[in-house]
Image 1 (spheres, rainbow, N blue to C red):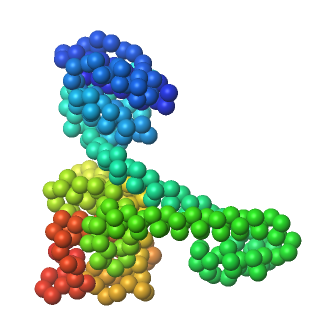
Image 2: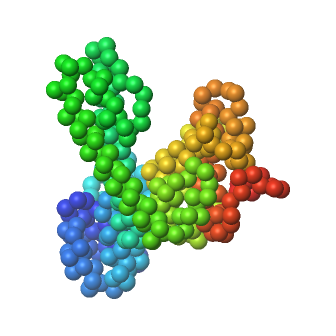
Length: 347
């Protein structure tokens, strides 16, 4: 039997198909662990298909613990559901069940990370939310001061709340000083998250030290990489990590026409953004000489800014491949290889 689940926040729609594809039951169940435990705990092992979403990590773990085969469908592969002219929860559940019954590989199943990794990754996502909030507030203060003819000098985000008050005009202080107080609090909380990251790297994820051999890869990027990838053996080759993280161009070949498209941006956006930041450092003025840096600078050349952006993405992709290679082999990273360039070795 195959069961399709269209997951919603409060109630999820179920569609049960027998071996020959006939619908034998359509129903609803509350989207809670006790309700799913009662409904699926009494069933014989079957195939359960649901789309990836907010509830899919815990639901897939729960259903799997009950002995069922769980397939978490990639939403990019089931556009006939999202773009259907007659989109209804029951119809969506039936479509998932039929796709899962015919050939699960059509759904490009998602492998959710473990519960511990999910909890640790929540710390990084919370920190990222605070950093983005701090950036928005800093931009607001700078814009408000510029609007009255003033200017806050360049400084780091961590010191902005200390240096900005002296440059805020008196008329704007009632409006902006409270924001600067909030910025100080956000900076303290971000530092607290940084301390948690460093502690986790030492106590729970020692493999991160292998990744930190590469200049530009700090504790934050290393921990995010370990948590998102989680199991390096899931990839047969290191080069498969690039497409997994959405760092390769989309393809739309038709006959002799094969246009250059932007990257797919699949996978985890936080890790992809951190790898791009690391690539900026590697190619920037403070990046130490290395085979990876030289390769990226040659690719960027002295051309347009668009070419330089492509070089940054290309370095980020090779960096993702390199980190996987180091993780699997445990090798000592050499900035400049004696015989074979790093870029060629890890491609």
